Length: 201
Image (cartoon, rainbow, N blue to C red; front, side, top):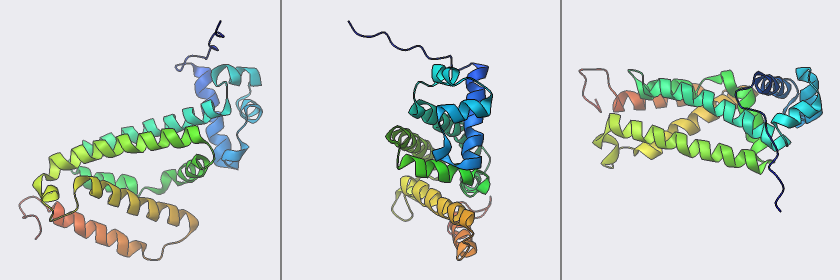
């Protein structure tokens, strides 16, 4: 007979949220390699068995943290895409350095934890689909007729340049950053000119 599934605490639990917050602070202070059931429990002021109740494995905890960050990113991206100037709002989000510390930790973590890598890849693909749909609605044939980068390519270009600016900036590298920003912003001005001005002018 198959073993009964192990019970896991409710996602809405305040204790679960406390554990995730403790793990978040531990990673920010000491890096992802510092995360263990015992260390997180100590930081949260809980018994290790209680952490295990909500997160049976370390991967469970790390994936939950990845999901938590993804949900926050999704909320901010949705705000950008619903704004009056969605492409520029998204560009501002992609070049915001406030999340650089955790982004770097989770990119490194994904190299060592398959479960985290899988979740991050799935989230990135879903995020790109939403962006492509928004760009297609907004820019229509201007991105689909071959004259400019198609919607899927625009999503990659903005994310890639934004990621490079943020990650290099976190290392203190800024060479070429002003020029790259200016290039992207001029390109967006051509694609999305001020009201009353024709595209490409």
